[in-house]
Length: 82
Image (cartoon, rainbow, N blue to C red; front, top):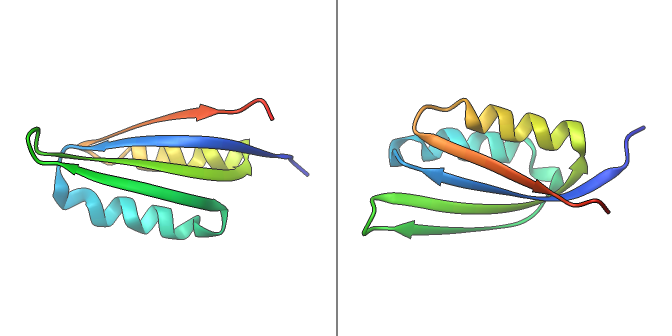
């Protein structure tokens, strides 16, 4: 059994039409999500979302990978050593 890690997944959504796809993936892994903050940055025409997740590293990588495969969305993860 894997130990949980605490991580922040940062997302930049360049195509707001893809927001539903991102939300579907986040909902799929909702049991691991501690919180999220989203900010529409209208001056640049993007949305920025930060997701705090407490999950095994494999789950965190899966979430980031699935979201990162959506065209028009960038995803990066910062994982704690805790």
